[in-house]
Amino acid sequence: MLSVLGYHQAVLAVVRRQDEHAWTALGGGPVDDVGDVLLRNAYRLSADAHPDVHAAGRRAAEALELDGNIDYFQVNGEPNAAYLHQEKPVIVFQGPLLDRLDSDELTAVIGHELAHRLLWLAEDGGYLAVDRLLDAAAGDARTPQQYLETHRRWSLATELFADRGALTACGDLSTAIRALLKLETGLSTADPEAYLRQADGLDLSSGSRGTTHPEAVGRAWALRNWLAGENVEALVTGPLDVDAPDLLDAALLRELSRDFAAAIAYADGLRTDAVATAAAGFADPPGPLGVPGGAVRFDEPLSIRPVDGAPLPRPRPLTDATKRYLSYLLLDLATTDPETGDDGLVAALVVARRAGLTGYADVADDELGWTDKERARFVRAADEVVG
Image 1: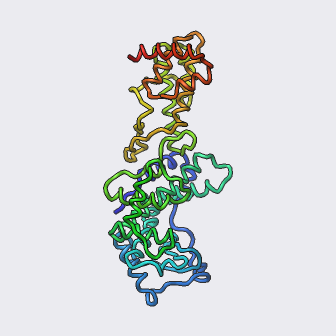
Image 2 (image 1 turned 90 degrees about the vertical axis):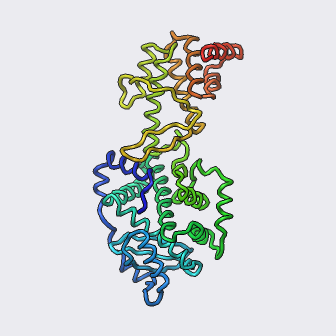
Image 3 (image 1 turned 90 degrees about the horizontal axis):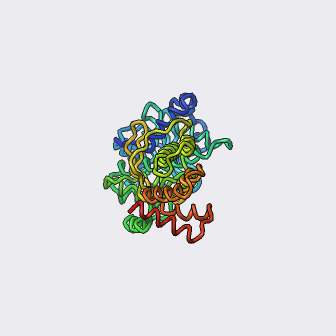
């Protein structure tokens, strides 16, 4: 049985805790029956007339341990397939897709769609409730950006899960990628191995730029690496970016700011009441400083704490924007207490050096207007401390 992505588990935990009322209201089973609409506007693919479709569906359902009693319909349009979450599952094919797929590829496509059902049935419909909540939020102009980014990443994660369903259904990586390529490009033939070599020329760990689906090349890369036992969720999350956080990253950035502020306030040369008071303001809600943890380097991937039982996430690199934000946080605290004087400025350079914030000196120089001699003197003093 397929397991959901760590991103799904983490978002479910956060949304269930933060939006219990909305989560409960949007829970439940399948949507209202749309059979009448389909019968009026689509062509039903009966088992007698289209045995190949039903045979592929039974094969996919068996591989995913689902009931093979499925309705299939055909409509006009661009090549595509869609799953409708009904009491009895429904898959709708669009355009000339069926004419382009062999039986194994068709099994993969149906497996992809049935994987959506697998996800919506898991956790007593919990993932379905989150999906409904995020969909509703995305359609409201008042929705905070963090929810919109969570909706985007959730959609990407859901498609990666569904792609795993395609691979599980057909049992062959090349077949799953070939079916994906035929759907995405409209080609009648495609070379999966060449496409994977194309994927190797990209840094896909930097994250997908897709809005509802990851780019097809990223999906092929994720399937291959998942089959090899690699963690591919970087395609969903990307680096830690202060300019585009989702709900999980927003909480992480608050914790990171609080912990870094505490570490700054305990640093030699900055340990004053005024700096401590300012640093306490980064707690949410503001409060006493906690004990700072071990040294953290921001020029290396940052270890991330798991969320409510979700798998331990892989370390995440920080974007330049996030490092710049941390540099400004350091500068703000370093200049909070005028009595720290030049010693405070040198102490901040020491903190930056030890934290791997290589751009801090430029930020401080730009904001404080150091002369070349002042900068050289401060940097030399910091070098003597660091050794």
